[in-house]
Amino acid sequence: MSFYDLVQSTLRETVETSVPAFAPELIVCATIVALLVVRMLSTGGSGSAYPVMVLGTLAAFLTALLTDTPERPTELFTGMLLLDSFSLYMRRLLLLFVLLFAALTRVSGTPDRSDATEFYVLVLGASLGMCLMVAANHMLIVFLGIEMASVPSYVLVGVLKDRRKSAEAALKFAVFGAGAAGVMLYGISLLVGTLGTAHLATMSVQLAALLGSGGAGSRELVLALAGLMILVGFAFKLSAVPFHFWTPDAFEGATAEVGAFLSIASKAAALALLVRVALGLGHLPSQLDRAAMQPAVFAAEVAAAAELVEGVSQPVPVAAPGSSAALRPVRLYCGWLIAILAGVTCTFGNLAAYGQDNMKRLLAYSTIAHAGYMLMPLAAAILLAGEDPAAARLTVAALAFYIAVYLLMNLGAFAFVAFLRNAIASEELPDYAGLV
Image (cartoon, rainbow, N blue to C red; front, side, top):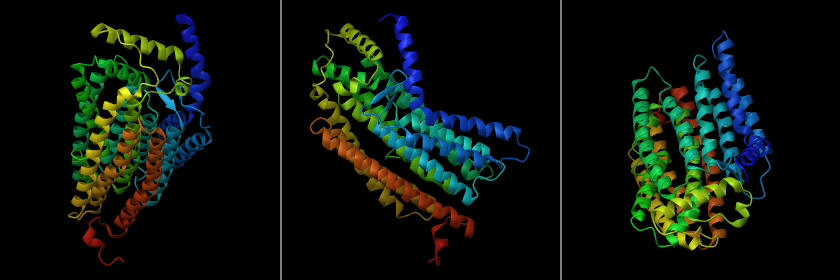
């Protein structure tokens, strides 16, 4: 295939497949633009921001709801994103949460009319990054999605500009977040540099070839270090111990509504992305899955990576689809690491919650504990992926159901705190005495 034919094929695939499948995210982008334009043309503040927000988010949610689930995973935009049942489910869940979140902010009175446009633009910007996270199929999109979700979240924590505690929490969140992002990016660079590709499916093929040939040598330490550094970034986003330290301060400094957004949407997207990356690197794509991928781009990635491996050691053949056994050390390493992290996180979160008097700090530690609970089935799915793929799929399905229940449960808890804040002007637990 000539370069011209490759470009034409890529453009045709983008127009015919990728753009229609990416329609909900494009509607979110259009809603952000509409909010800014309406604010620019309006003379009465941000009073019209809420209707624009709701209409745009509703349109995006309905579009996602009407998107047909593909028979097999389909790559979009030359392998950058992956459209499958899991990404569609998580995208619908996130957009539904944004709709419910907008309704909560309207009822509770946060934000006020003066800064509603900026508030909703930040929420939609973070939501757009989360939609990219749940469909990421390339390490570039992994990092881009995390940062698109994180940066608006830093600002949302400090939305109460007249409160020193809110500004302090936002600064802590931003500084710690930048540090975690730097560590994660360095880990990604080590992993991509070692394997010669950033495409998740191709990375698993090259990783299996490298480990299966016995030629990894000293690079096993580099791969282990890269995985550990990438996990630091995920652990920070999930508020997993010992990278949870920002969570209680950020939740206490932010409004209860923003706390709900951080507790639910941010955690759901980070967990979905961790599922995507951990399972993507821990097993090889089947022949059926590969048939729906971009063959020219996939072949070019494999060829380039094979040349890199050949230049460093002995010539290494591309791993066959049935050689997932070569990835067993990867599954054991990731699975046990996440399992230990899960056990420590849920135990610490529950014990630390006992001494809290502020309701938002109490819910922050509840969020930490639930992060541990949600990591447990992920560890099981990783360990099962090589021996019993059907059981691994059931485990991921159970995790997806848990996330949906967690969304409704935690949104109700934070709504309760917001309504009582408006009624009694307090978020301290002792002030709730006598309410029941």
